[in-house]
Length: 244
Image (spheres, rainbow, N blue to C red):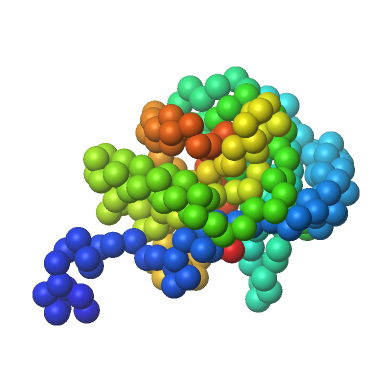
């Protein structure tokens, strides 16, 4: 319709953007994170699942991938129902050597949410294995919004420079109120959520080349505002395109 109306190409091909704006990409937290939706119990459930599932354990053993639960909740969808559950973060300690490294990660991104009720999303950290804590009392304020806007601008500039903008249907950038425990500054984390879709009813993760992912992550981390950059590996369903 936009082309029929003669609108400029840069407007017609713009990525979809949520009506509430960045508000749904800036996750907030309660004042008391210690009682946040049974996180400790669900962490135990994840470890039990990893140890008891032959398929998952075989992948972990063969690849040295490690998995931990993130102490935050995100929106998902299963069947006709919304879910509100924890993401699982994966680590690949051996480092990333080729694009084929995505294969076991994507398998886990499918298997884990299907078998663990309290997980609806899987993300990847390029850093060495570590743990994360929820940052209490994070609301929608100017400093957090400006940090997210800076990361979002870096992503948009990167996509345009690499001629990737038209290849990716949508690329949400999400600010998570969690930090790595090895970061004394307790800086929050950024999630990259590039997806392929036709109508937003279903979606699959867009997999950038490892070199591109590293370059983009390094650019975001170089701002000094964030402790980690995570890549969302989840299809829709079980994850939604947006995190809220």
